Length: 148
Length: 121
Image (cartoon, rainbow over all chains, first blue to last red; front, side, top):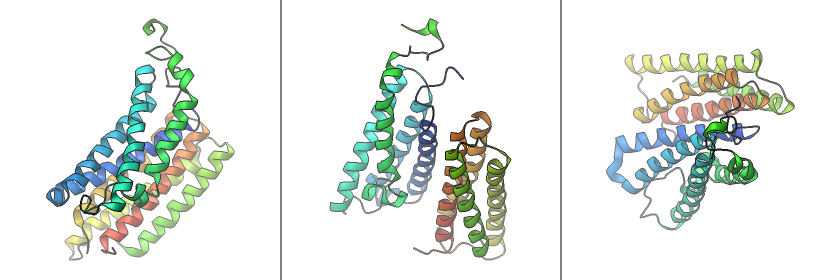
């Protein structure tokens, strides 16, 4: 287990599990919405699908070791934070744009605000492990030959 | 979906979730009790799944959206095996917490399936 990402330790594992759950929720939601009534609210439903993909990528990025994946984790989690804040705010004021809800509507209220809490927790976790992740060679701590 | 059976599932999932999260934070590694409770949840899900396949054939289709119910019914089945697999691979106390998170997820999804089946909102 020496090749495990430094992010996938301790409570970081719970974070990864919750990402998995949210990825499942967002994927399920977007599949139903797109199959059933895409033309009703194309923007909301496209967004649901994008959110689903981002959760999946973020989860993988937290599991896989290496500097590149650390960066992917940063980008996807910042994207999520932005998404939930922007879409959460828009959904409060612009009903025209959002005739139906996305996972990010009302700051993720339909999902117990997990979409809002999770990126905050993720960014805290990434920051906490910044040094270890950046110091590690690209292939993970144990594969010295793959480093620099 | 049978309503009283859903309530049984919900209670079992919530209790299993509370138990696993508490003993996980105390420091228990995954054991027969925590893994077994997730296996029990999966068995109940399978039973409710079979019921939900048989009922429409006997003239009691869901009152709500069948596609949405179906997506939930299939995806909820993935949660306990994923949590159990995790617990078997990673023998730390955090896996016990993950088992609890899986149980809570099932509780929420089962309740949502109940709302969809009976078109409650």
